[in-house]
Structures are given as C-alpha cells and as structure tokens.
Image 1: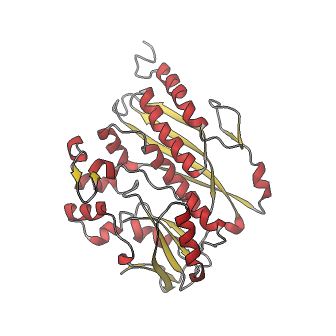
Image 2: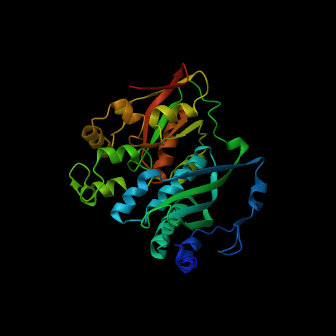
Image 3: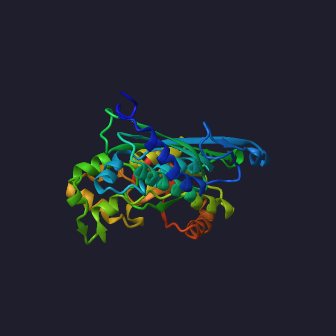
Length: 341
C-alpha cells in the first residue's frame, strides 16, 4: 500500500505546480520576494512607508455553487477570475489597492491540466486587479469529493492610507448613487439559478435569442473586477464617500452596509437596463421581484456614493477604466436602509 493507492497522486501534484508556474509568474509585482514554490509568499512592504497611516485590508471568498456549471460544461478557465473578483472587489470597496492573493483548490482527484487551467484563471484575475499571486494550495481529497469535482476559494490582502479609507461616515442626504454594470449573475445566487434552470449539458448549451448566446456562456461569464474603475475615480480627484459591492443578498442586504445611521438610499429601478438573464430567470422561475433584488446584483456589481458636484468626473473616470456607469439614485434623511422605486 502507498499514498497513490490511497487516492493521492503526489506526482500529479508536482506536475500541476510545474504547469501553473508560467501563469503565476505573469502576476508578479516588484514587491514579491523569492521564487515560486516556497513554504510562504514573501511581499515587501517598503512602499507602504510612503503612506501617512497605512491600513491593511483583507478579503476571503469563493465561487459558491457556480463551480457546478464549470463541471457540467467542462470549462475551467474563468472560474478563477470569479474567485479573485469576489475577494479583491471587497478590498477595493474600502478604497484599498490589492497587493497579493492566495488560492486554495480542494479536489477529489488532481488532474494537472485541469488544475493548471483553473490557476490560469486565478492569474488572469490577479492581472486584472494588479495583485500578485504569491502562493496557493491544491489539496487532493479522495473519498471526500467526487473525482471530477473541486472547490475553489481565495484570500486577498490590500492596503489603503487611512485618509483614503471608504467608510460611509461622511455620507449625507443628497449624495448621488452611481452603479457600475455587472457582467451578469457574477458568483452569487447560483443555488437559486440551479433550481430555475435544468442543470444538464443540453440545457446549458441551449441558445437564447434574448441572451445572444447560450445559457451556459451567459451564466459562466466571469465576475467583473472593479479595482481599476475605483482607482480611476480616485485618480480623477474624486472622494468616494461610500461603496457597496453587490454580492449575496443583492440590493437589500448590501446597500445598507455602506450607509451611516440616519441615511436612507433610494434606487430607481428604471435608471438602467436590467440584463436579459435576470428577466429570463424571473419569468422562468416565477420569482417575486423583491426576491430577485434580494438575491442577485440585477446588473449592478458595484454602487458608489459621491458628492453631486463630482458626478460628471466620476462617470467619466469609470468609463475611462472600461466600465459602464449609471446614475441610479440618491441618499436622503431617514432610517438606514434602501428603497427601490
């Protein structure tokens, strides 16, 4: 008896590492010390000394049951982008710059090419956000997970100068809410998605005219990474007063998280076009509108609040970063919460 007969292939693990190295190298920043393959990732904090009062930010998350679609479609090159996005968007939401990222892949069986493809997606997400992929772990769990399945999670660390920290503390009535378009469902609500649509290869390969592509292509579209857009706003000289990453819990749970006591957010539903996938899902699943807005991002992956005088500069800065912004509402005096009208 040996480890391989017990279900863990050490040689496959070595091959996975070799295959993923080229992708990891593409994410390196000058602050990364040492090579790939150490027991820990080393990252110099020398540049942080230039900040008045540097604050470290961190975020950890996964892709939820969206990985089920990757299994069914046998498409594993974008799920890593989702994992990075879920973490770095939270860091950026506080005004921070992501510095480095680590991933964790648990699998029933280590197929080196598949693992390398997943990590290639992680590396792409890191490149989009400017974070270095400084380490990770691939754990083979025979008997705990089916051989052809895996789970993916990640952890990001960023930094922000305290004076640039976005807290929502100075949000006032009359400030303007600007939403940034999502790429679709992103990585939340897939437990409901999988109840609405039949999760088979045939169903996911079905083309829908209103989507302009197959259902699977639409649902597996990677989560947008908003790091560059928020940095563009900052570089334009605009102070973002509050920011909300619209993830699990949709509008009703996430928007109040950026509000101080005594401030109420009002979002106009007709201020932008809700993507077709959400309309299709609501109709096909007979889902109440409030549940849709309480589960999904409904086409807006990030919402920022700015002074009315900064609206034009904010809109232009977001567009310059390649994203699509909408003026979606405003704040008013009232109980902390959100109204959709």
